[in-house]
Image (cartoon, rainbow, N blue to C red; front, top):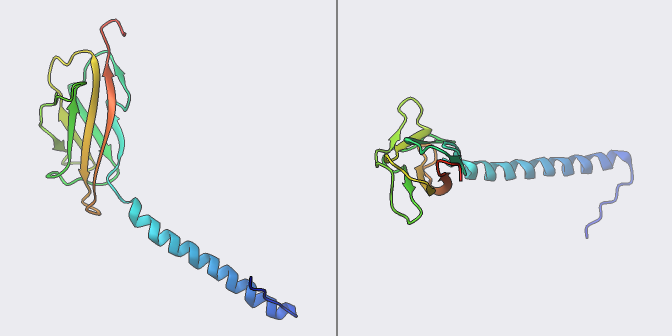
Length: 143
């Protein structure tokens, strides 16, 4: 343990100032290291919403993300309970808002559990991410 002895008020002030500057420098270095890592194209919202319970199946599924997307390497897929793809494959990144992409869903989607799988490539940081979320289409009686 290091002890700093101050014999007068004049010598104690520089020690406190140095400690305060060291704390600010440490916080600055921490923030400089953390902020670039948080820059990814993450899902912020979707339609239908995550864990939605729907009486009517969606005709199109839309996801909104935190950063603009590379249209060539970003996608949405909708899978049924057996893992079969039930979307139409027409993934589109919105030309007016590159943070949004959508995909059509096949007509006649029956009651069941569905999983949306997404992949994004951010045009800001070049990071590739994948994720998923469920939604449910209910029977006509709501069960």
